[in-house]
Length: 308
Image (cartoon, rainbow, N blue to C red; front, side, top):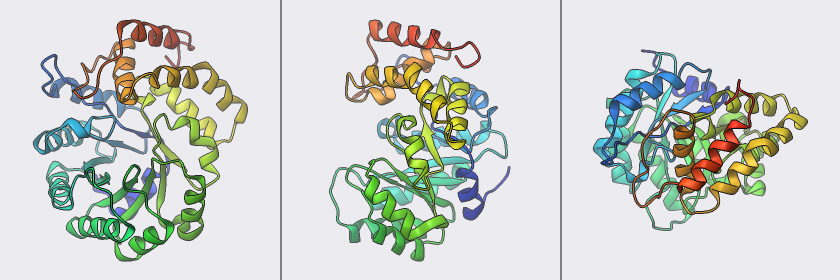
């Protein structure tokens, strides 16, 4: 199996589209490992910068630590040797360190560090949290900035100096001013990942800020469409980006916005609509209603056959 150094992983992640596979559940909500492994094999046939196992779209928040390690192991075992696998770490610092160790045992190539659970924290506390996790592992670490963990340019500059294995920053906020300051301050030291729900809507403007890649949930069920969209963004084909936004992405978002948590639920619905069912979502999320699933299925059917 290919083992990526943090620097190699940083370069690889920034060079292609990123996929965050859903986690497959059976009707009783237990992990469907066989189906999950087959889906990783399917997705890994496409040219992606990396696969993030048990991430936000993979319902990290609803998995136990034991399940997180099991899901990551399944992904690492099933993906081709040269496809990077990143695992999640999060909650409190001690738990995040334990999850980072589990990622190493599972054969992951890197870590996506989620915000600390629930509590708000200042920049000093966030910096100490990241430093502790980075010190605990030899794997490359990507920080996920969103919700109660929004990092300033000064904090990221400090972390870039104190954490050699810090390789990336995933932005889940959409603050143009902050991203401009971060890129102006750190330049190419980090790989910058667009991480807003349905990141395609921000992909082209964010490219101007040094955000060369993003996490595509749509890739789960429309990989060809997602890759075509990414290519249009990287080549700055504004007309093609606008057309694909109007044809699919924006109507898709209209369905997504109807309920809290639908950013994940609609992806599993898309899997069902395209013949790759991943089972239900776990509570507290809820699945799309039958009429909403039908609406999504019709929307997908309107796309050219090559991308649907």
